[in-house]
Structures are given as C-alpha cells and as structure tokens.
Image (tube, rainbow, N blue to C red):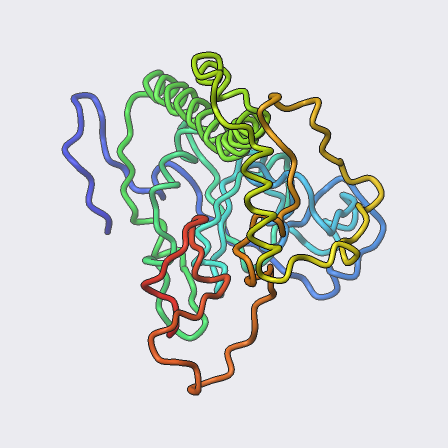
Length: 310
C-alpha cells in the first residue's frame, strides 16, 4: 500500500475502492472486425496514442452501434472514467486517459469510475501513481484489481477539491505557455544570429568606428597584396571559376562601405593551400599526432580537438 503524508485538518485518506469502482475492459471475439461506424467507441491501448486522445479519449478505430454493443455484451462505462493499461509493455508508458463519452474498452485496459469525488481531482492525483511499480514484474507485466483498489488517496472536502483542480490547471497552463516560449527561443536566437552576421558583413557594426577613423587603408589595397602573394606562388587559373548558379544572390559593392572590397574566397586563402575536400581516414598509416577531424568533432558548432582521432 502506498504511503500518505501528513494531511491538513479536514482531509482523509480513503482507498481507491472507496472513491471509485475499479473495472476491467472486455475483448469479445470478432469485435475488431466491426467496420460500420457507430456512436459507441471501443477503445484499445493503441488508441491512447492517437492525436487528440492525449487526455480525453475521443477517437477509436472501432465504433459500435448500441445494438452491436449489446450483442457483444459490452459494459458501457460512463464519461469521465479514468482508464490505463493493465497488461503488457504499455504499462511502462504510464499512460492515463479519461473517457470523453460513454464508451467501452478492451481487456488490456482497466478503469476507475469515480464516486463522490471530483473527476479532475482523481485524474490529477493518479498522475502521481507509477503504474510500472504496481505491475507484477512477470514476463508479461500485469496490474490486477488488488494492485489498484488498496491505493490510498489524500482527499480534501469536495469544494476544496474543486479549488485544487483549478489551481493545478492554471499552473499547468502557465507551464505550457512557458514551454512554448522556451521552444521558440532556438529559432529566435538563430534569427538574431543571422541578423547580427548580416549587419556585420554589411559594415553596420563598425559604422561608428569608420566615422572616427576615416584614414584607414582601403580593402582594395589588402586584396592587391593577397593577389600578389598568389601570383608569386603560381597564381590562379581564373578560367576555372564556376559561373554563379541561377537564383544565387551575387554581391555588389554598392551595398558595402566604400572602404570595402568584394573578393573571391580562393583569393584570400593561403597561397598553395586551395579549398579542398576531406578524405576518409585511411587507417593506422596516418601520421601520429595529426588530428583527423570529423563532423562529430563539432559539437555545438565548436571544434573539439580533444575527441579528434589522431
């Protein structure tokens, strides 16, 4: 039996069987072959994973008419019944759902029909129950009535249950908003980074510095020095330059400060060290001590030389 902490005055700690009826589902032979849709859902564990069924079960692959439900002798459980897996690996997923309408469910599910307790209060408390710890630990795990019914629930008066539910759900809503805001941060940071880089390479970030230092050397002079260095080492075969791909933005100097100059990447590389592709590691014949850099060596956009193979 689970332990219940010291409770406030006016609270009590009944068992689940005292605040609800614990009922298993049914899987009559042939029910899965029903193809004509009806208005009574028959839920299976797999239906718990359907979009829209994250809290209230509303979508079922099998829907029966009332006559079909009677012919299969199904027990129809009321809306608000709390259901959860009772057999197999699904127990470890700890999924709990509420029936969104009067429904039936299969033998691999168990339910608690609340009695004189706020349904949402029972639902939120049951989120603290670890189903896996209740299962019998066999090759095919299973939860029995005897595992659920003796569980004790800290129970306040009904009006306080309502207040607690309201508070929990208000805090949960705030948590969801905070999570959504946090999820949006990486995209916002990436946009900000791209904006900063764009401003940097338009000269916006150094505009004040240029205004205070009007006598700096022109980039054209620097490019001439680089070109001379390449010429001393054999120069470039300009004819090998590929034409810009259609649709690719071509830089024009009118968008840059007048002290800047546009250069081709190959013109600012170290002479005699052209832009090259990497190679597959050939094996132990690599020179000892020379790092072999892989994509995996760039965690978080930073080169980690410690983990580089050598």
